[in-house]
Length: 272
Image (cartoon, rainbow, N blue to C red; front, side, top):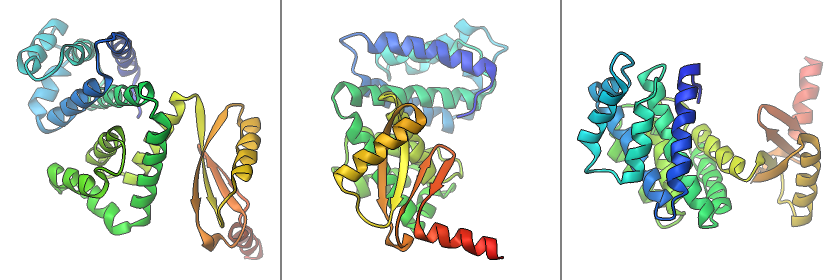
């Protein structure tokens, strides 16, 4: 997510409010997350409403009153408070306001998983869902189709993953797919994996290996990568026998290719 300076400041204020409401023992983070994401869906479809609540020429109180008048009966008090903070701030564009509210919703859902002790499970499930989508080109095309109705995409996700993953995983995956805006769905899901890992102050290492790694091998690899990057590493491993041997590790934009296929390709480039 790329935000300009004004939007970054606005998001920071809204994040502070989100932290306050989620700190209240009576607040359900999952409910706040789902409600904020439902607002994203609403604003995506209602262009006039979106422009009105992001209009910097109108008074902040007017934007808050508009939100309260239309959504007070549909949102819980904590969600409404976060949304009022968001719309009363100055955003660089309506799209960045949408991105900001989406970020707040995702954060609340991840907080829910964190509080229930399911954050690691959610991170792993998002990774598995991303690999399934990436491995099925027809599925990725169907989920990326811009003209497909949102409800059709939502139904497809639920048919594929409902009752198989944590409810937080399902909600986050749905949102990543509904707002992919023509980008790779798998990449959008991988971004969620990284957000979950950041919650545990970890970096994500995507490992593609020619054969299964034992628990000891995984521990050794994580330890070596932690020494390189100076933080704990969350390994997300995919087995691909076509590598022929070795493994490929990606952390952020860095790729370390120690596979047999990678070495052969490097030699082929040298000879060419």
